[in-house]
Image 1 (tube, rainbow, N blue to C red):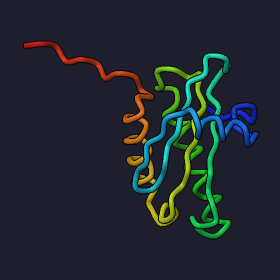
Image 2 (tube, rainbow, N blue to C red; image 1 turned 30 degrees about the vertical axis):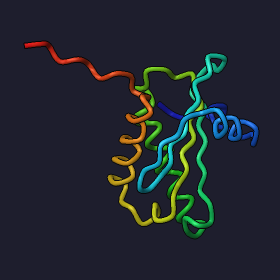
Image 3 (cartoon, rainbow, N blue to C red; image 1 turned 180 degrees about the vertical axis):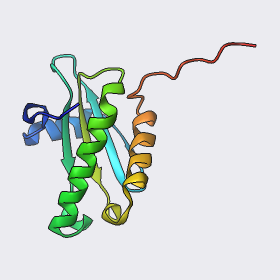
Image 4 (cartoon, one colour; image 1 turned 135 degrees about the vertical axis):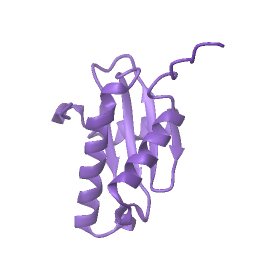
Length: 123
């Protein structure tokens, strides 16, 4: 799944709405926030990398990595009509991609983005 430009969050009001009414979970390297909105036609994503995360080239690298995570794992979401904000924490730039992915997936599961896991058959 490629992220087209129209799926990017660009307005400050969208970020504020997710922050004020959405749910979020914090991990070691990132904070993942989400807000379900049936009025959306598809997933809308936003990435926040502040100067506390590192120099410009490190922040750009983090945004590329976050974009790759969303492209790889968003098709498995139970509901695609939602806002999704990924906020980098200080120290995220020093993390390996596998560490970022594990942290991102952990927070996504905690938020219930993938739906309920299939139940195992009763014995």
